[in-house]
Image 1 (cartoon, rainbow, N blue to C red):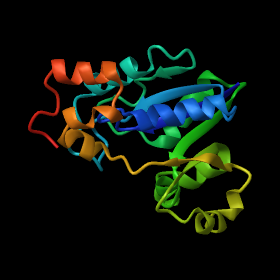
Image 2: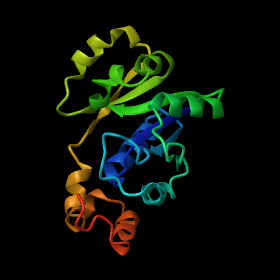
Image 3: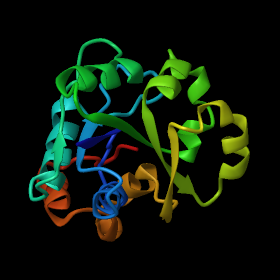
Image 4: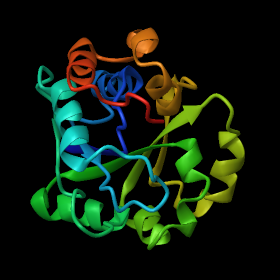
Length: 194
């Protein structure tokens, strides 16, 4: 089985996240997607809602999808690095292939991550192209790892930002799963927060 690990802050999870997962499943890139929300100790985000709330939103978004699930692995009191997350799932699924789902924006600086080259060496990367990124240059730069880098054809990431969605939840309802939006509004999430 091919298992895709989809990390992110999911603050909130939106339809582009789900669209990417459905596309990868439908086109046979992977057989299962595990969403892994990052913990609040992630140093590049200082406005994350509590771990349990973001976990619950992803769970709501994926509940009706048989080949999607959410993991709480990174929701700890300390920072968890991506390589640790991938190793964790490899230990759970030793006979399966682990794929890391990310955008060209992540690929552009993955070599600066903790054990970034280890990730490139040991795991498959499913790369979603962003409209604004020159992925040809990235492929040249990382040609040493070309056997593990898979550019996904037929899908480009829209420039949908979680910040924009948070700033006006009601008017951005087209970007949110209906049940996630209900959860956000009934719990008064993001009110007065960006």
